[in-house]
Picture 1 (tube, rainbow, N blue to C red):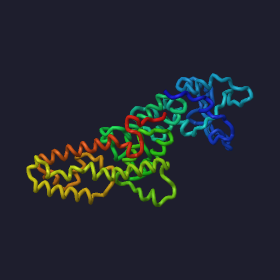
Picture 2: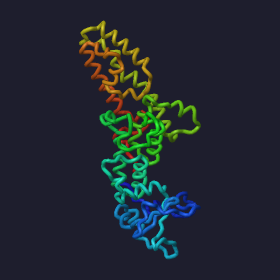
Picture 3: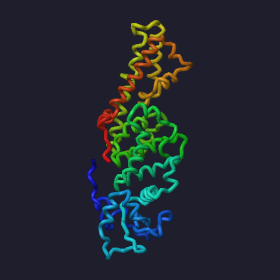
Picture 4: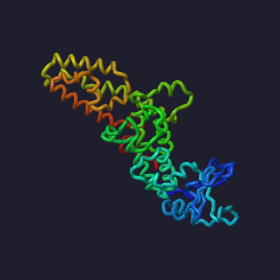
Length: 341
């Protein structure tokens, strides 16, 4: 169980040196979150929110502890309400408060939230110990980037399923969004989603050259980049040495019923793999995707024993690689790959 954070550690000292505590511009009232009968004013960056102590205290033990501390008479108030300066972004605070107040745009079961909302739920849910909010957002993140191969196979890679981004390109799961996810995972110590994230970043339609060679800025933390490159090299090796090892074996099996034909197909398969555009994520292609790469289903020309062996070996190889996948990125094994939340 995580150690309870001290209230002053979470909320900060409120001194002018705090980046989010004060602004040189006069603060503005939130249009959506300014209740006339509110009892506390939260200020994040340059925005003030007049809300209810009871709502905050009910959902956050951090705020519940804070409200037990008497407000100094010398401190300023607004409409008689104490002002609490937060170190968080105004956008994050707005998202979380609207969820706590049950805003229809945020708690509608049929509505998929924007990623900025999910990020705020995790950041502030973790910080203020609003567990139901943090857990819901983490669940969405982990369903998008799962830890099991079965769930990974079910992810729709034509778009986003459990949260959304503005659609500004043809391929919506583009690199820059995946980089944002990796940066966020590092920011919040969500390590369990990293292997899936790294693998997806290695897929087709990823213009990595543009990122690594045409910019002086790293798209992700250095530790993440190091893990990504290490895992990519290993997966490239595994692709030929393990995943497609069965290609060299068809036509040589004792049970093979057509050695000449199957041996010929083996050579064609080797050339296909060697000439195929190389991207490491193909290690996890299901058999149907591999088979679809051949015109008119020519791979089915293998005799039945060789074909069944190939399907079985392909399935076992991708499962074996997934089992140890995190270690390729210098991360702990799946069962030890926990989130420091």
